[in-house]
Image 1 (cartoon, helix red, strand yellow):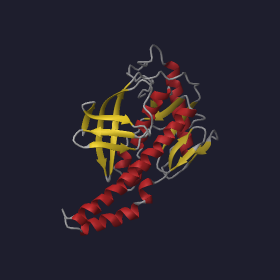
Image 2: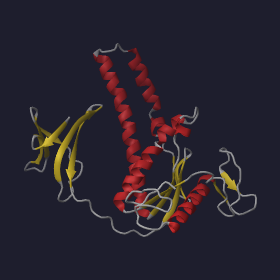
Image 3: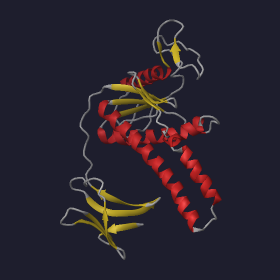
Image 4: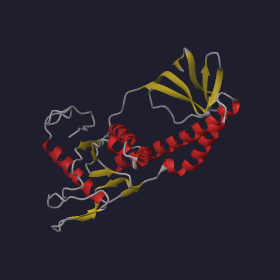
Length: 282
């Protein structure tokens, strides 16, 4: 339900600094206020919805977006995967957290219990809410984990080089689809772009083709299978973890694209239009 602030709903604070929402034909409702509003923000609308057993109020505000301060470059490349969720070009790795697999046993039990219920009855509705609560718990854990990771990335790096992966290759794979959906790499890419834009961090997206096979030391093509987790150049140039080696190649491509970029930040030499944070599909 969407209500206009001052006409159908209103947010106010009482003498005890408690947040109250006054909804038309409902009355005042005490809410847990998540965080203070930005300075000078004007409330326009409120969105009231329900997920599983919890009600939420989302407040839409208008305010002048602050300009991000200039950041030191500190470039870093990153590669994503299923064995390690994130691998940076400096060797830092974030292991797969497997949010879904941790509660998969409980989820299967709840879904089997739901199948035994009679559709439309009270016990069916309560069991369906139990299943919805488990899915909501997984979703919150996954989003919070990626939020924490993206905030850490933009706080430590001034330039993040990423790869433009086609996620259908993993999400439709017969053996990797569960892990690919659990990793939510698309959500990570979305949150990284939005967080970097507000923090002033540059995100450059490059073509991921052969990043794990072209040697980062000599440039030779080294054919390897996915089961080989170490890149061992036969010419003796580089011996690295496969994901770290790919992250170094991604960073090198991004820096090459940045070095040849000319003109305003709204476009690059290839003619691609980019966002204000100067991210580009190269």
